[in-house]
Image (cartoon, rainbow, N blue to C red; front, side):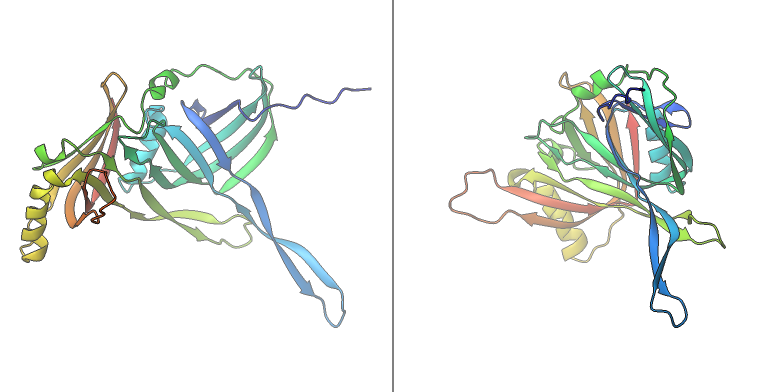
Length: 301
């Protein structure tokens, strides 16, 4: 009598893009394959008939460290720059000895969203980014049994990159930004347009408009005067100046070595809001600054 194959944990997995392993991936979720269930009646009969409709594929969400492999970030930057690229890939699942037991392959995939973390001086959690992938087709298969590469050169670098290790700088406001203590999380979206083609079961997916976020950061009220003056001149007094050319969100490790940089282009401050007054609060009084952007770039040191 043949023995049942061993079960295995979901903790050992590899994400591949065009055959290349992507480093420092924390988890992968989604990617289910579904089909619409159609119900109808035939003629005068009272019976209810059912059959399957078009196939649908759930989006895949990948959580990765900010200093993960460059191949993933090359793909992300192309999306954020308005030139989305299709990629093929696979999620490989392994057992405790890292032997490949199952694989889930996806084809003609586009990035639908990139969600960046909140940077907060009080948050010591790892700084992760969530990438949403929308594939035209996903298929399941049996693993090859080969040994997966369990080493990851980027893992040790990512461990020391926390949400509290960052600096923020806005062009022309360098001194006022030295004590920025929080930047809210933000995301870049690419609208995915689904197009039905003849009798093809799966939809053709086409990249649409890139949706850029607004950026929100917080400074102590004592440092907020330059932002208040700028906002008064441009918004309250009706003087419409040119956008601020750039802002930089730099993240580093515990040794204060810079590991990467997010560049915001053509920034426009549209709101400067004070904290509410509260007689029971002992927190430092802060000012929230919101700005719109026209472009974004990401680089790893």
